[in-house]
Image (cartoon, rainbow, N blue to C red; front, side, top):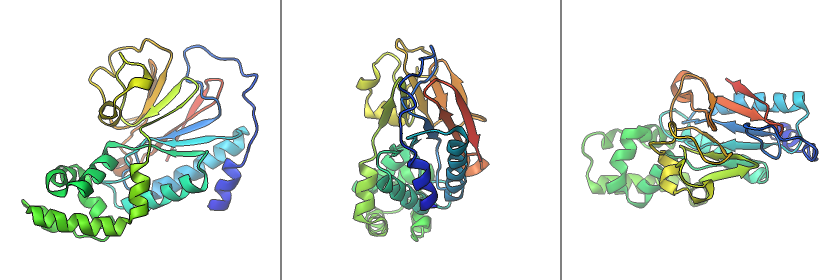
Length: 265
């Protein structure tokens, strides 16, 4: 697979210099593939990488970008494998693979930093599956675990994850931008420029994100809110199709001229 990906991301060049801008469409500088929430589905990640590779080969895309919107952990059975795979890809192809932080990565990191306070909420939001994927039995935490129990669990989890992977998770950016395309995890405040969005809004969303139009030409691709199918409308691109439970992992492939297509497992 690594050899295949080297071929995928090794197609360098500039086919965009003379591209005419199309109004009211997302227009990244290079071909861009944005993948929705994974939530522990390593199997779907591998399938999606194969679909993306085939699409790049079929379209002749050069110097593509692969952007993942966050929420790699929790709910699904293979959070540890997903994190390891994405870290590997982003370190092997740092110019081409961008892994954003989602609110579930934030909850995981917060639990490691303050387990007794942050842990119970993380557990309610699917953290038990992440613990199990790292070989830690979540059962003792199910019924009013003591602070000492949470501290013990967090120490075991930190050891299982390892310091380098913790650093990698903590360094995941909150947003990525190319042309008029922005990618965040959960959404953006439509009344603020994209360069002035808060971390909380990017990780957890904004109440007016879906209802108030933006005052600029930015297109915001995101995950976080589960929908039956991907949506492209009014400057917003919604990509979370509940992969961990539906088996449908969605990706949008956007070309510099504004044309796009969906890929789905």
